Length: 287
Image (cartoon, rainbow, N blue to C red; front, side, top):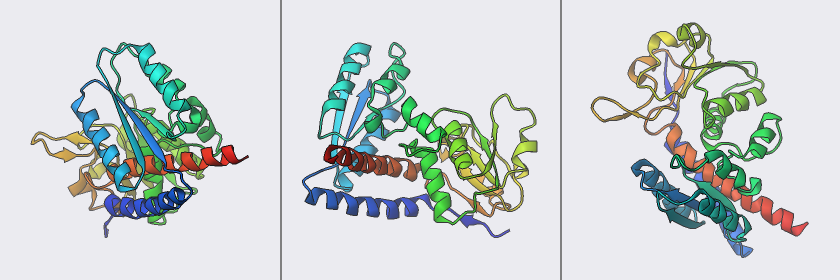
């Protein structure tokens, strides 16, 4: 089987080039798409993600605001800050970096963000719109997966997609996006027995569990497309995914690497959603 690598860096580069061009068009109208990110506490991984988002905003010519709050900030103060951003005309997208300290309800925070500025795609209104096939802000990582498959002209309609993972951030919305494209979708998770019996049926296999090398060559049907969403560290401290890449690439027709696969697409689709939010808000103001 001749394996083809799905280069997330290159796909993201092309998508970002398009976004930057659209941002420049907006600037000529006196509008700068703006993204506000709220970071609570000092989680090192969260700080890294936020730094990457800020840098990408600047590279694309967008307005970026970072609000850093102490770990012990009250839930009410955080909610009030979100509401301030909801009312700020210069901010088109709002993202509260997860996870939050245990004394703060993530659900309350997400529900406080205006659905029109919910560029993470986690608000119940956007989730509901996605579920019913309406226009919505889509969760960035699953959105990026679909974009990658569109890039390689993968035929999704009628295909059997197996999603290993059921998180609200990746697994569940990924399956729904595939269903919206007329795929037959099977969800697997930590309680699934005999995982291999399901994964070997997959035309498209999405691994989104967070377990090093969970998916081996024996899990994959010859010629399947394998999308690795996992972001883990192996025993040597090296970044790796959920898929045993070196072995699975022998049977997969297409496969994403880690790093350099789905990862670059997540931030890219966040930028796309922010641009989309700016366009939508402008349109509503002009009505």
